Length: 446
Image (cartoon, rainbow, N blue to C red):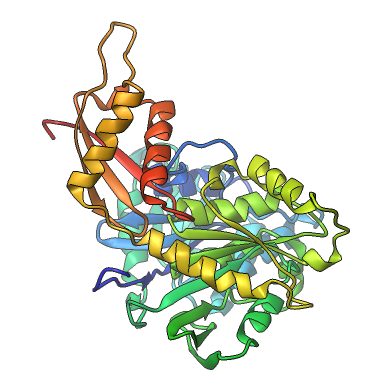
């Protein structure tokens, strides 16, 4: 059962646009800061990011680095145009980046014309302005006609506050997800053509399912609500490929952009794999976003009907998944065929199970008993000087995902391997199927 009062908020999107070599990715990394790193440093999570969560003062938002969108087989100006068009479709506010050292170029003017037509709010960042003596370089950029140029240095972080203040002024009001707290919100994510839409249709086509469609909180999504066995669900549209065009067909990374919005609004994420094609790097990237967002996860292997099988095929495929998705070792795997409807009945029971685990709250005294037993079985580590980790007290501070704070004598002594050991003991004691667990070490005096 979910805790009452839980609200999912849809965050606005800021896109960083500009020609090559103006410092878009440096600016992106500077804004994102620590958010670029994964929550738990487990192997297997690919780290290149073009889309992340960020915050500034009281504002939370998504940020896109269009420089990370690879359309490398196109002429330079076409690459810039495609990236700008993609950002226009996705963004609420656009950060147009130019290079203050080099001055204005024809490519800058080309991007400005595209952005003008978008009617989206634009904030102009003149990057690589590393000291006040360079401010005179700002004036030529007024002729782009996109507003006041803001001097910034992505490398040093100078001027970033004023730039973000201006961007945040144009963000739309945060939208709240209005579903009942007990409704399970789920999304299906994965590469194009793995069968996400077919799975949704097969899921909704079963008997005893009451279906309705309603406008979602995102501007172009339709959420499908349904009820089965007296439980309420909503399938969050991952905003498929309705906007046809060359740019969307040119890059699979586009699928990540839409997936992240759906992940943010979900309780449970179904990571869909193609049994015929097997696992590729893009599958891991997309799944990594759901893991980092702290959502409950089910791995769904679709098109299982198309695989030639013997009595060990399923076991071998799951072993392959565990090898490739090391960071999702907690996620259950189901094998289905949307085409033949085989094993489709297995999905919702697993969704219910992981949703319950995602919202499980453990009594403090029971939690500490488990930690004490774990330490008794496997004593805490020591540093090179013989100082031993001492766990004084553990408490659960939140759910979705379950998050625990451990008060210790020295947080540096809680190494990854021992943290992993404690996580496994918690899973053995309480289940936590399908949900990541966050463990935070704090010094006792904190």
